[in-house]
Length: 175
Image 1 (tube, one colour):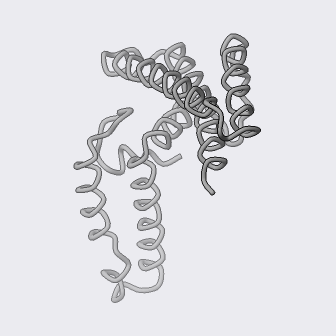
Image 2: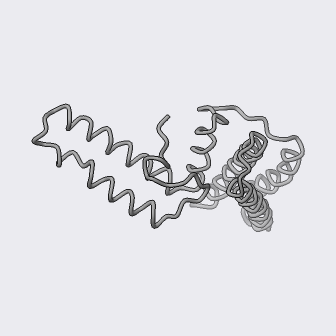
C-alpha cells in the first residue's frame, strides 16, 4: 500500500494541513504531469499517468476527513475493504430511539419527530467528533498502540452508522 503521507511529504495526521495538502498536490501534479514526458517515450508517459492517478487519489483522500481516517486505519492494518464491523450493543441500543424518531418522521413528516431526530443525531455526531479528536491528540502525543487504533476504528464505524441515518433524514426530507 502506497503511503499518501510519504508521497506528499507530510507527517501522519488525522487532519492534515489542507493548505499544505493543496500546495503539495499542485507541486506533484506539475512534476508528474504526463505532458512533461511526451519526448521521453511511451513507458515514461505510462509511469507519469500512474503517478498522476496516485497523486489525485491521495489528494482526494487527504482532503476528506472520513476518507483520511479510513485510510489511516488501512495503513495500520486495522481495516479491510468491505469489513463487517460489530458495533457495541450499548451504542446500538441508543440508536434504536434515534431510528424510531426517524421512522416516525418518515410516517408523519408534519410531526416534530424530524427536529428531535436531527437534534439527537447532531448531539451524537458532535460527541463522536470530540472522541475522535481526543484520540488524534493521543496519537500526536506518541500513543501509536493497537488499542488506540481499535478505539479509532470503533469511533469510525459508529460515525459511519450515524452518517447513514443523517443521509436517510436528508433523503426523506428532500422533495
